Structure formats: structure tokens, C-alpha cells
Length: 142
Image (cartoon, rainbow, N blue to C red):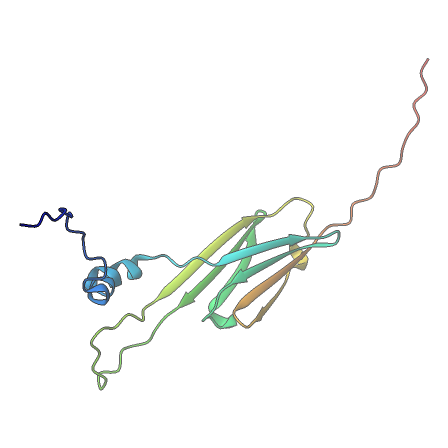
């Protein structure tokens, strides 16, 4: 008789990997993810530049507005009616929206904001207001 060391059975990690990963729960979770436009904010002496990553949108589907020093960027995609001639096993394209808000500093000129949309990146340039430097005053001490 030979003695063999007992090894506790290990769970099979890769058992039905693809079936577990791409099951209905996976797709339900993906549908619940809220789209958010990722942003980069850069500043120099003359302006603040805001870059938003919004791939898949056309410039007509994006709105930019300023109200009470709050900059709001919104995007909305609407997929039109589904073609009845095509037979889908799963239809996941749907309406996808995003909205981001940014509070503007008082030293920014919100009347001169410019926007450019290129290759899925929205670039907003917000110039700074020219501030006059105060002159030094010498105050006499009595």
C-alpha cells in the first residue's frame, strides 16, 4: 500500500471562461454603465484649455453652454428605429448620453470661449481676462 498526500481540490478557474464572461449578466452590467466624457484641463498665462474625450459623437450632437460661471458640455446619440429586416440575436446599440459640468474661475472670459471638435476630442479654449496690476503706493507714516 502506498501513501499519497491528500490535495484539496482546487476550483477550476478557466471552466467555461467564455460562457461565464459573456453571459447575460455581463451584458446587463455593460448596459448600466453610464457614459462619462473624460477630461484634461490645462492652464497657461493666457487661457485655460479643456479637452474632453467624446468618441462616436458628431459636433451636431454636442452642446456647450455657460450659465452663472458653470460650463456644461452635453452629448446625445439617438439610434433610430431598428431595421425589421435584420434579425438580431442581441441588440445593444441604444441611446447614449453624457454630461459634464465645470465651474469657471472668475478670471476667465466666458464670452470668448472657442470650441473645436476633431477625431473624437472636443477642445475648449477659455481665455483669461486681462487684469491690471495695481500700482504700489507708498504710505507715509506720521
